[in-house]
Image (cartoon, rainbow, N blue to C red):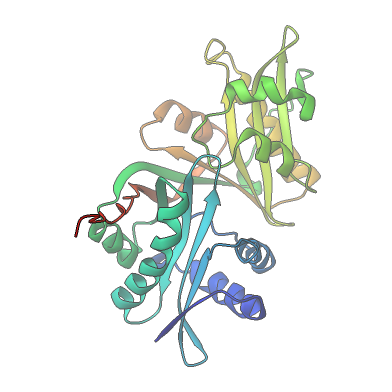
Length: 300
């Protein structure tokens, strides 16, 4: 077994390998893109930093493992793309983790990883390294054939722009996997949308929608409403608007979203639109232990 940094010449091979791995529940890891071309772009980005952020385990010409570090430098946290392994699971995972730990100790305070409950090898890894469970989220999905539009029109929903940054930032959770700025930038990409709900001239809520697989799947990534207006129907109107757009403008087959297992009120709202549970993601985090510098003996 050989562990090496991800090289540009191997990007296509590694991206295709990751795509097929993440299609399998007992290998699935969150935050990895779902399309081979998007995975290629995602891991290519990891090769553009001075510090190594992606590692591949090889057995001859065969890929047997991968671990990527998705960096959020301003927040001093990172998310793991992996670790993946197809054989000698613990040995491969630990070898890659040892390599990645050097980079993480230099730049980050917290590391996060998330996966399906079926990914037993990753769950065992989190236990060996004392990760703590910080969130359990259900992934819900609604198919186009199960969506029954209300045909209501809302004149309060509008496209958000860079000028709306401060208003959205007040509503956007600070610990989210996208910052407000990142979300606004991503919303400019084709078939992604960021909508706001205007109430008395103010933004009282917003919804961010991403197209995951063109012509097939979209995701409601964020829907947040001002705490003083929750329960007034703003979230309902935003979700209705997003589903109308997904199924009738983009002609997608399915839309997904995630909800914390404790948030029964939100889950009940989503089920009203026809969303049904398809899986549960367990998210773990760990504070990175900084290596203390050696104590120098200046006395002879």
